[in-house]
Length: 85
Image (cartoon, rainbow, N blue to C red; front, side, top):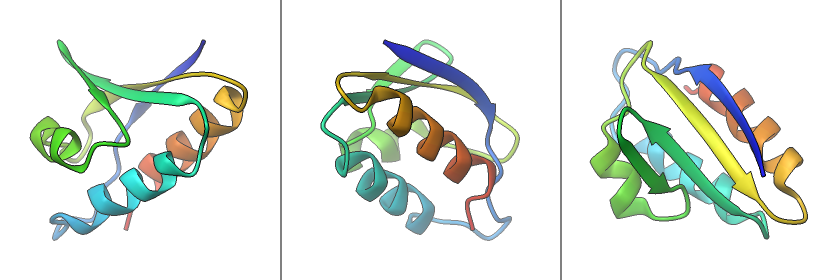
């Protein structure tokens, strides 16, 4: 299992689009991918789950992945969260 903590950088006018793109990116990987914020740990491939997470500017989240392409999944999702537009 791989994990990395990152500070979220969302555009100030961001709505659902960055979350939808995040789910699309997570779904490209074979690994199980989760994002944790506080005490909530959500399947990053679930649009409803990710919408309920309520990602906001400067929030710290941890990206977890487990599987064959876990390192790549964590790296790409962390990079996206740092530069989500």
